[in-house]
Length: 468
Image (cartoon, rainbow, N blue to C red; front, top):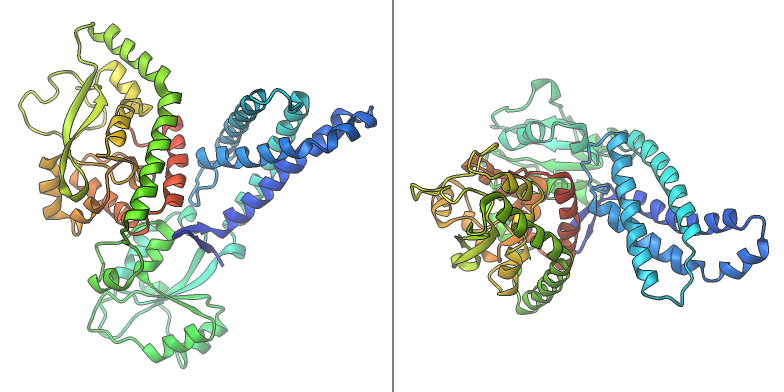
């Protein structure tokens, strides 16, 4: 099994196995470190050993969380070893800081700074070695499903066009494509397979683990009985929409069948879920506000130094929120005061001349977004959700993008699934691509997914992903 579904979110099995191993490494590194620390005084080691589990447990929890926040458990991670080691170092440093603060708040607990330092050093080398081995193994056939694509038309061709990189195919290997009757060929002819006899027998002989039904031409007929036999006898059968949802975290609105939306799980709304999300938003807002307050004060001072004390610190724009209601969104001003002097809404572009020097930095680090915490507190936004757009853009985008208004079923967010997985959107084309991810979030939203997104947003801030 290459994927596991947890609280409606798909997690890649190889990375879950790696997570489990790394948690154990960090936990037992504490005991190993204590043994090395007191190797010449075994009595001190025996006196300490009963309390080591506290430090071990804290590090085993905080280190993987920090690694998740720096992107080390992303299924499509493409970093080389140097990048991975840098992220690992940052994660261990963050974990060390969190645990140190925690134990200093409990002065009666002696956590052993020397032991923790040795444990972190050991963890760095052991996990670094494990990661090097993992990178070699994860792209082999060991963890991959062998997939037969039943169809070779337009929808099937999207697999090759959108999932080209090795990192995109870490959980599956496409064995080939089967062209259906009356279907126009849209994939490389060299990748076509000819199935003779029973579909199940063919799958069994060729070690097929899963069949992806990619039927883009409604005139073509499917061998339903044969597909049912495959499913009942252990060969997984999945439609291509569910395949993209699982592997990429997208809802492919370009090939969507409305009936799939009707009968697939998700899009469930309830007052209880909304109340839980509201509590999560408030807790996250107050926590981040407490941590970010010094940076917000420094930003205000920096704007005044660059543009004078009379320069406005904040700006607000009208955005479209839940149920298409309009509201003002608040940000630190990152552009010159005459950025839209003609009164027309303009997309931000790379190297935009309207951005000030301070503005370029706070955009890169996402500090300009922090005043939106006020929007979260007053209930017009959530911490996690689709990026809110201006009414002028919404009118244009709704004409070009199918199901665009479905993103307004939930509150817009300061961060979101699309912001993690797609660069900054600065055109209708970008908005189309981000809509694929936003539809996934609206369909599968949960507190667990919100936590994952919020944690991984740390990577976006640290490494300046997608900012303009």
